Amino acid sequence: MKIIVIGASGTIGKAVSSHLAVRHEIVSVGANSGDVRADIRDIAQVRALFGQVGKVDAVVVAAGAVHFGPLAELGPEQFQVGITSKLMGQVNVAQVAAEYLSDGGSITLISGIVGEQPIRFGASASMINSAVEGFVRGAAIELPRGLRINAISPTVLEESLDAYGPYFHGFEAAPASRVALAYSRSVEGAQTGQVYRVW
Image (cartoon, rainbow, N blue to C red; front, side):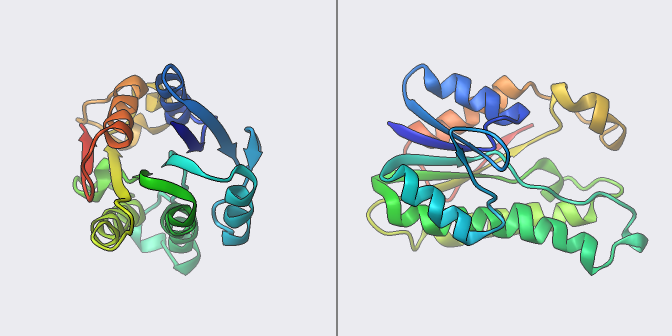
């Protein structure tokens, strides 16, 4: 299969690319690095990305920013970070990808554990992750040509504990390699409209 990996230079993206590259052709994409450059917040750049790469069999996203901070200090600008990046960025990818995927191809997005298991200072992240999962469930019943769409919901990564550990006291961390297995299950499996939890 020919697979686009968006966010390929990140911790999860590297693990997913490494895992899938054993069996498939990987096209790495990032805002500032990769085989192709694109900022998923801009649908024109997403269209240009797919126009350049052409027909593919799967698209996976391991990218998207959200703002962490106390609820009382969150204003429209802070919420907009996640809305524009992690939510609408991934929606942009899914909608454009549907035009370029082979019949039966798949789209795999990323949410996160705080969509169901909230943390202090994570209200915006909880909102965005839940919205991504809702989009996946809704899109799954409308995609044409046997196209599939799923989301991966990882817990905090072992590799990211230095940066995010203080937000996740009491949570069991998972290695990025285990998250990569969930992406493999989405890409190489048969289900659609699913949220694969790596907790």
